[in-house]
Structure formats: structure tokens, C-alpha cells
Amino acid sequence: GQQLNQNPQSMFIQEGEDVSMNCTSSSIFNTWLWYKQDPGEGPVLLIALYKAGELTSNGRLTAQFGITRKDSFLNISASIPSDVGIYFCAGPTGANSKLTFGKGITLSVRP
Amino acid sequence: NAGVTQTPKFQVLKTGQSMTLQCAQDMNHNSMYWYRQDPGMGLRLIYYSASEGTTDKGEVPNGYNVSRLNKREFSLRLESAAPSQTSVYFCASTALELAFFGQGTRLTVV
Image 1 (tube, rainbow over the protein chains, first blue to last red):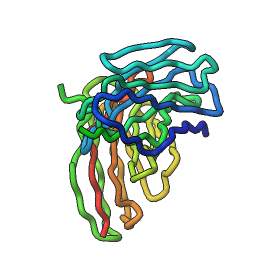
Image 2: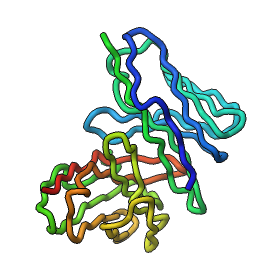
Image 3: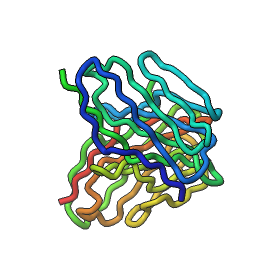
Image 4: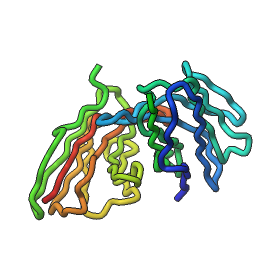
């Protein structure tokens, strides 16, 4: 099946710093989704992207749908402690558009 | 604003016991999913249901069965629990490819 690759598995930043993470695939995706999972909770949708080249913001978060349709980027500016969590990229695959998730990046923010 | 509701939130089973994880959504979504989450493995799809009356295997279906009882409910059954099934289980439903998740069930098999 189609795989979504997220690296590294963990990122450590200082409060106030910006951070960028990406998600890549060997296959084309028509939709890119970014989710955040807080500790002990289910993932929550942050941003949805539907068009190649699209740039969408949600507060301090900005995500881009790569031109090749094989990658997407999420940027978090001026990080704060509550940004801690696991960030997943996801996209629909297959005949029934079932959602496939990357392995996620665990973000830690040092105060 | 219930969204997706999973029960129970926590469960401890002995090896060989059976149990059913319940999931219900009140958003009138057609598609529902069961994922398991293990450290470093992300969210792996166990089963999904594109609509009422249909179910399909995902990436890791072995040891599990599902039932799409109606449009609202999608249950996951472990017939004979094994320690390898210790995990956090998430149910989700989707509308227009956007998934909404329950709060998870933390299952330990001893």
C-alpha cells in the first residue's frame, strides 16, 4: 500500500523557536492532512490541503501541499509548551479512500 | 457534541479472554475505522468500513473481527486476546476524507 514517511521520529526544540516537519511518499496524494495528538487523547485535525502548491495557515501553523503531490510540510512558528505532542500526516488511499497515516513525529518543547 | 465515543477507556485482559471494544459516532458519517497505536509504529489500520454493511481488512487484521452494526456503531472484537494485542485502540469516522477520532481504549493483555 501507499506509505507516508515522517522523519525524524522525535524533535526537540526550545520554546519560541520555529520548527518544520515534512511528510513524503513515493506515490501521489490528492489530499494531505495534518493531525496532532496530545498525550492521552485521540488525534485532532489541524490542517487539510487539497491542491498542489496550496499553502494554508491555522494560527501559528502553516502547511503546504508539495508541487509534486508527493510531499507536504508543516511549520510551527514561535513554539509554546502546549505544542508538545505527536504530529501525523495522513492521506486517503485506495478505492475507498481509506486514510493512511505516517508514523508521526513526537515534538518536545523545552521551556 | 459527542462526536466519536469509545468504550471502555481502559481494560486489562488475561491471555485467551475475549472482549468487544465499542465505538459509536453521532455525525452520520459513512466510513468508520479501527486503528491500533504502538510506540514508534504510528497508527496502523486494523479494519475499516466504508458504509453500513461492509467491512474490509486493513494493515493488521489478524486476531480481530469487526461488526458494523448500523451506521452509528462499529465494534472491534478480540476472540482470544494475546499479549501482542496490548495497545491503544482508536476508532474514527470520516466525512470527506477528514477523520474524527475517539479518545482511545488502552488495552493491556497479561
